Amino acid sequence: MPSPQYADVPAPAEITWPTAHGDCHFANLTTMTPVLLDFEGFGLAPAGYDPALLYAYSLHAPQTAARIREEFPSLDTPAGHTALLVVAADLLQSASRGDHPELVEPLRALVAAVAR
Image 1: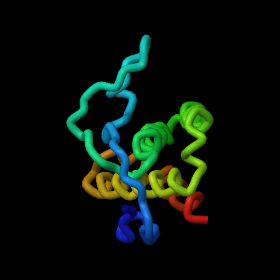
Image 2 (image 1 turned 120 degrees about the vertical axis):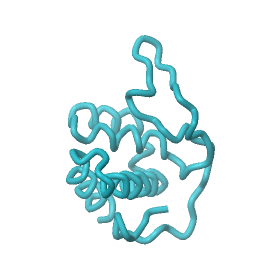
Image 3 (image 1 turned 180 degrees about the vertical axis):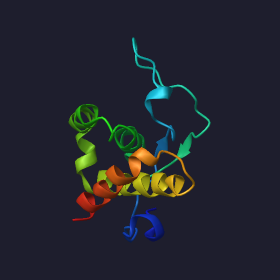
Image 4 (image 1 turned 90 degrees about the horizontal axis):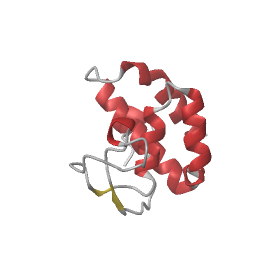
């Protein structure tokens, strides 16, 4: 659920929790025939978590981010917005420890856009 400490957005009352890869980023995708690798984060996550994570990691590459939004229209649904906020909160928390500093401003912009 979104952490008010990092995303400043309250968690929705209801969240669907399907199975997710849990670590969907480009280092865990093959290129010729898309295959997901590294299932150590496998488990339950908010619906749309995997495409939201892939999208968030691509925010520093606007053309790639736009393509991901185009390929995953579910990110523009209420469940997709929840997933985007959860991912943003997760990554902002990670950034507070020094990880992915290049994503901080794009993630804050994402939170502001989704929270509107």
